[in-house]
Length: 134
Image 1 (cartoon, one colour):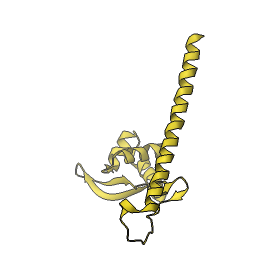
Image 2 (spheres, rainbow, N blue to C red):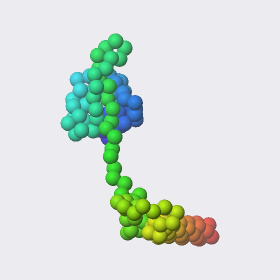
Image 3 (cartoon, rainbow, N blue to C red):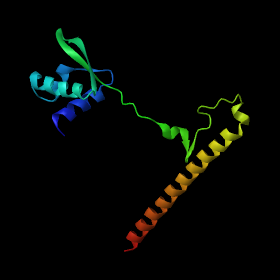
Image 4 (tube, rainbow, N blue to C red):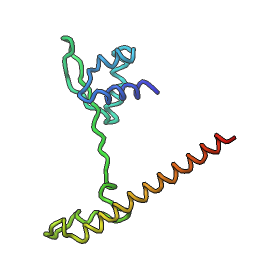
């Protein structure tokens, strides 16, 4: 792992922010080298830098930008997109047939995943038992 990755990991670890002088002390590098590393992280748009004061000295408070991940998979049941997304019907969810069907697909998908896990566990158990008999 290079120093840039280590610095970024330190910044991510401190969700409330970390002073730049702490980073160069933890990485055991001089402040000039740390500034170059921080500049690279800023150029890559991975962190936010704000002016701050630590122990009476001017420094920077650094925070990792939050990673925004699209979670469309939460709106999918198998290959069926959530029926409520964009729905303009004025229905009660308890009595919506389309919603019930979608929830049923979610339950089927979970059951299928559970069965796959059970099958894998059985394979490992049988391999383990065969190894004990050798």
